[in-house]
Image (cartoon, rainbow, N blue to C red; front, side, top):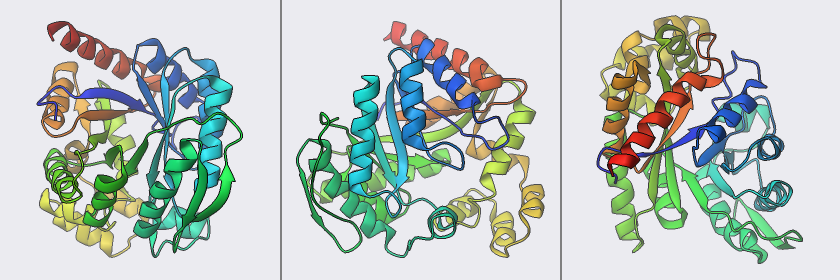
Length: 333
């Protein structure tokens, strides 16, 4: 781990209360400020590969990580073809992140079975490697299967990041990932997950993969940013694993309320500011850098989700502040 100064990457928040096209402006800003990596997820707006292509053509140098992609929705062939397509069209480095996603996305939006998603995560990571390296697919798993396909485009040779939270997914990341990413975690949870990843890697006789944490961040404009993060947390409070984390952080009453399946509007109103502030990094520049350093004691990389509000369109002010902090740390080193 970095011991206080994590590497910084940027992820598009794809905030549902903001214009979808703002994501492209965030990408341009991150590129112009010298961030080395941009994460492009897939939510309710853009297809991730289409957006990655647009970003690659609209920026100069930033590398692209696409995902986490739901392994029970995207099969290894389509992921490999997508990565190779973006790399060929844009000339950029393209890496891939895999995850299990949520029941709402997988089961309701896509109508797919999520019952064996961790098995699918392991099988997808295994099947992708030869495809991304230019080999022929030969995966015959119980959830994920791909046989006989080989890329016609140049192989992107992408790394594979595994999104994990529970012990089974952490083990998949330790055995099959180049990196593990955790989303919306407290500093204490990041410490616990780092220890679990290291232990699982020792068990697998592998070097510990790098660990990244997705963290919502806002420098200034705290009130609007807090409301944006509060809306994001509605879907996490009752989720397996996350509910335990929130309880351990002292928010058991809110979790109990969420498990009762109230109307989302009522649950939103019940989320206290303290909970939002525990799960995000909001404040002036000094406070934000101090909190990011706390994460840096346990993770190698913080993937910044810049809050995008009317006070900070495209998260530009936040990204400028963080770029200056990162540059100052490099000069000291």
